[in-house]
Image (tube, rainbow, N blue to C red; front, side, top):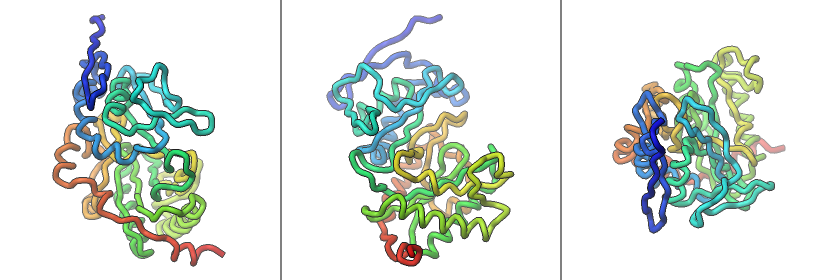
Length: 295
């Protein structure tokens, strides 16, 4: 066994310990920890935007993506002084609000970043997210399904941004004006879910138990709720292709891309060309929709 390699880098005035930089995290893509940290720095202006001031859950893969992994909610000890935390329901979460914190987590082989859907110390949602979760591991209809949901949201007067989950699914993000509750968004979500399952019964289901879904795509409006998490925009995923959860245009969705098309080795060039698509849609009011749905 080769000896462990340790060192450090200085970022924004903070000393970040680095261990085993040549460890392969994504063997099929040839991505070592050193390359991963470089890519995290490239992603940081985008990824941090959707993790700052939120409670962070990470998934760590110390031996790489094919090794045992674990979810980390409680902050590990010892913590560097520059790492901020927040306590929520007796769990001391990390708050990932800077590049040093991101790189420190990257050195710990934190590969996936799942922030809370609300800000620290608050209970209202930051945005609305619909999760389309395929039952099949390979689902060629996932972009078709996303396009149908996008059309329905448009008919309701809502602009939305689809993003790959980075795994097999698609999430659709609707920027909303702050002040709406999770329960109110769940009411709208249930309405849209019922509509698509009735209009496209061979494609969508709202059946929670996977064994009862057959080959249908689960329209999950329940995951967007207090205390739950979804993969952050621009988080890497522990998939063989080193895929990254990537916002798309609706035109791109209609060209039927694969989630694995967007990965750590090409995401930087895409962001340099297109920027953050989520920033192109302003927060919107859903009050008029709620007035028609609430008794």
